Length: 202
Picture 1 (cartoon, rainbow, N blue to C red):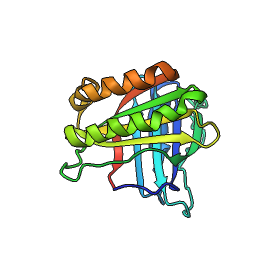
Picture 2 (tube, rainbow, N blue to C red; picture 1 turned 60 degrees about the vertical axis):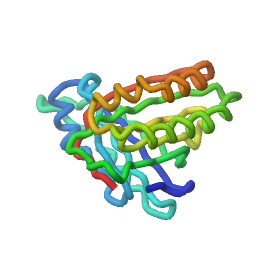
Picture 3 (cartoon, helix red, strand yellow; picture 1 turned 60 degrees about the horizontal axis):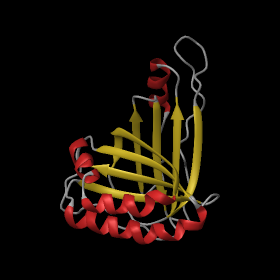
């Protein structure tokens, strides 16, 4: 399945300060109801919940962003919420021969490219995605997002059947070639790993 170039993608990230606030934030974070695809992931290390929703361009973007939650002790949680509406960038690919596991392994990466070298990225990304589809049955999907307000800021959403499949992907020659091609032109890269929670497959 591929989404059209004018699809709208909404991502949110909400961070809580304590375990109790994290649980309440998880309970209060709803997946978007009008999306073609939606997922919710939890990063236990940073107490962060992320959601992603992909919509047809003409649909209403119900982001499902939670309100500021209140901890069990009555104090307000320090929930920091950000939302980015982006254009579909390079590829969304789900292997038709793979069953969607109950708890896949998810990677989110924030990449800031040097603006004058952005043109290197699409070609390098296409070669990597082609190799993923051809050679890596453990990869369920690969999604690139580009901010409308800052085209040098890209987010990569990757989904794997398990953690081992993610490690195997990062050890491939195709991944190494991509890193060599793009790495020198990246100003910042932040990678987060999480277990899928309450995800909905397409």
